[in-house]
Length: 80
Image (tube, rainbow, N blue to C red; front, side):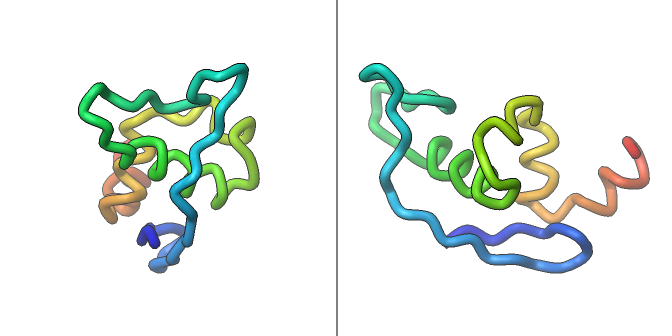
């Protein structure tokens, strides 16, 4: 379960621990050698919010972190 601050409220997004593989290679966020999958799960939740991985292809890490960490108001005031 992931928690996001979007559209002026918190939303919870549930994802499983399966990550997308394309031609035998992890699609999207890469997993470091230590085996931590948080970035791939994080990206999967963001894709679920917007409907697909294609829909989030232009998302920057900074934008993603703003929404995940409740900096939406800061982002809106400074960047929109």
